[in-house]
Image 1 (tube, helix red, strand yellow):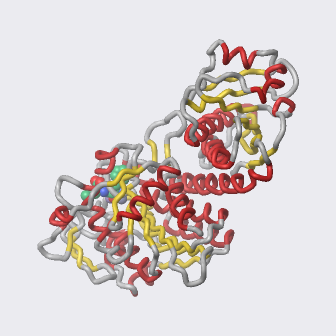
Image 2 (image 1 turned 90 degrees about the horizontal axis):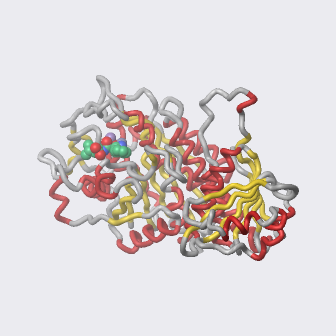
Image 3 (image 1 turned 90 degrees about the vertical axis):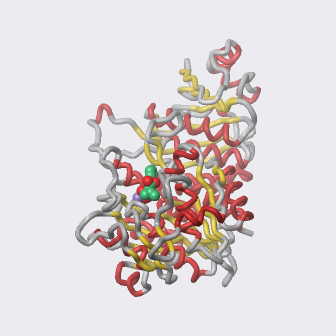
Length: 491
Ligand code: BES
Ligand code: MN
Ligand code: ZN
């Protein structure tokens, strides 16, 4: 369910709301604009601040109840030191989570001078903070059921000036919510067919043409690399194409590419049983692409975008690809498969070849590609690699704006040695070291001649633990990086 956001001007002290969120910076003094509210609370709010029960620190919150009238509750949340969109977004996320937990159903939000950029951040924060995945649980008995947060009104200095940010914030939030939901859905429900159906729904909502290639069509196009991965699954693999036409006719599109492994068992090079269930998240790149397209459909930037998702499951069976097999991708390059668990790059190879026909101005792919990126950068930084430094810089900047920070790893010539094969043009694994780099260099072989950047989101697409502002599960990364990149390319 999505949250309805609205903006209004005026004094929050008179708002009839079950919950008013007040975001305050570090070491605050009680805002003059909220003097009337403080009065209603018999001075308790300013007292809490003065006596330092509340210091406005990052992730700090304090809930107070009204003695009578006006907002029933006030939740103070800290934006921390330094005036930043990031601070407000994070505070709003915490507020969204608390509001949802309280079961108040609706809330209002106030921060000093909530102008465009901050407003967008606040909406995204509130929406994602309140996000949860309950659809596969049986409903709770009536008496213990809580109202999920369904509507939020934000107080802004000017309603007219806030309109665009209201639309933008909602767009980004809905895109990210969709990505999280898709990623959370298990492999038996979120199949390649399910992703294709989701793409068709997005296409229908926003008038984007959708094309879906199945096994037969891919055979005709000689996508031997992608099809090798799909060899042992009974589910039809899907190459999903979604086109957004916001730019000039004939203008080269931005291509967004996503790895959509609805489950990755590793294949014959099978993964250990412990935590294997997490490999339902191996379609997070695809979820990111579809989430970004939902956001783009709402934002309507003046740019053309083509989304390409390669989706299947990596399974075992008598038909499965084997270590040592040699296959040929649709651009004619031969590949020795030395490890069937390095399947993402095999799928993306043919998807990148297919992207070429759109003559894209830039290609950005996202994939939960390597465990090695977790070793290198942990769970908070996206691995970024590419063949065009300007576009790499653009993607890094987009990630920073969107709060999905990335860090570049080098694609030095020397590493290419590591993916040479005795029997084919290239092999699908490198040596022991530089696993994320050799994976990206493999992809680079199929992105030749296109300005291309690769995001390895294996560490950042989902959280294995419950964090203050991030529940255990999918994070929505890389939706915001994609959206920010596309917005910047618009004119
Ligand atoms: N989907 C995995 C990568 C992954 C690992 C994602 C951990 C999220 C968390 C990918 O298909 C894979 O299995 N990669 C192998 C590559 C290796 C065989 C060269 C890996 O990282 O172990
Ligand atoms: Mn794998
Ligand atoms: Zn995988």
